[in-house]
Length: 284
Image 1 (cartoon, rainbow, N blue to C red):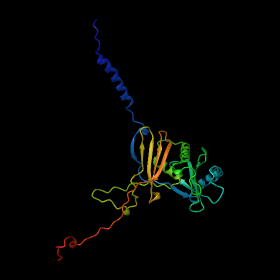
Image 2: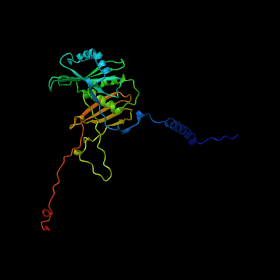
Image 3: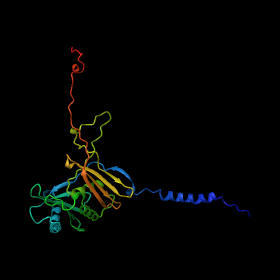
């Protein structure tokens, strides 16, 4: 019986084709969201609502009262002198961290003597009361709170106690971080683009601060996320925030610096008489 041997090239091509088919089957599924790369706009501007103690609900005021002894103890570890002077607090309303009551305590004994810290109280009883020092008598305790390792570490622990599913509300999460670090954040947005045939309004004619970025996030190739926004609450000197998260949504780094803006000043256009341009011209 005569047997035919397949050509050597065919023997090589068969396993290659099989591998290609298998690779096509395993890669046909959608990529997980955290590995998707590119810039995305986070939509309309947002801000953190700040309530005085009188504006808070009775339940939240009771929650603060129950935690005050722990807050005093934790503040004492940071030499914030919480048991001295007249301290007031406000609530930071943060929808991205619904399982915590966020507060900001401050004591102002003069413009240059302000002390301030944030506190996070778990609503369900699971978790710890945490404080984030911001300033003590006008000075940062360690590194500036917006970029400080203590702020980042505390923020990650607070988020880990939320027990919520990801993906996160990225802009809301970034705004919460900025508020806990001492800002009253309001994310700016680019002014609306004029319609075809229309001229863009002068900055003095619009409520938009002329920032050059709008709230965006970037999914990196390694599965991380970078959130970026300009805080226009400090106008006329808006500040840019950048928060860098890893693939597990853990905050790794935060930056905080003056945002780049485009400023244009109104100017008057002079009007010349035609005789100033053409001396030979005779008026009728």
